[in-house]
Image (cartoon, rainbow, N blue to C red; front, side, top):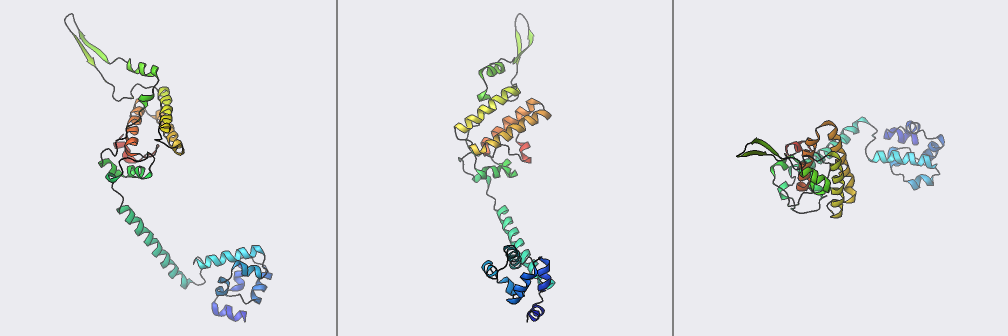
Length: 266
């Protein structure tokens, strides 16, 4: 009787038992209950197998195989595979279509709320969109700069830098050439920047402009600045840091965020 069922269904029961390394005792129990076809085995539940007295390990192996059958991961004949692939292709195409729709309907950056928490995710995502270069300042949030948190000694040293050069002097007149820093951070030493940077972080936490869960992002940005200092002139790194803080306040992306089009802004 069981052999007739196997021949009709095309399911090689004994080969299946051998493939799963199931003991002969399990084969005998399943044959006794006429559970030798793929169709009948697919209907079994864990309680059914336990009721037959099968060992727990064998029960788990059979149930895993049944699960794979139901998901279409295993088929008996090659003729069934094209249908399974067609179904998978339809699912893949459907998912790709939805993704394309999302990309085509990506919200315009200019429609972003003008005031929201610093850590909002969509602001960071919008900044990663190269189209953000076309936008004006997204909000009126004031940038917190390193210069605001320099020590008094550092401020005095920076302000006392000579900015006037005498080009010509005579009894009747003196011609003086006055210069200004290329950017507000110029002249800040690395150790001064490091101390002020930590004060900035403490300030951002105090005023709730950054959450404690985002501190690691700020520390990652800090580490990146020091790594830049190993490869580039410190004044160039300071210039980058100045403009980066301006952009971060403008767009609200996470600290440490970097995108290729940022070079055009920093």
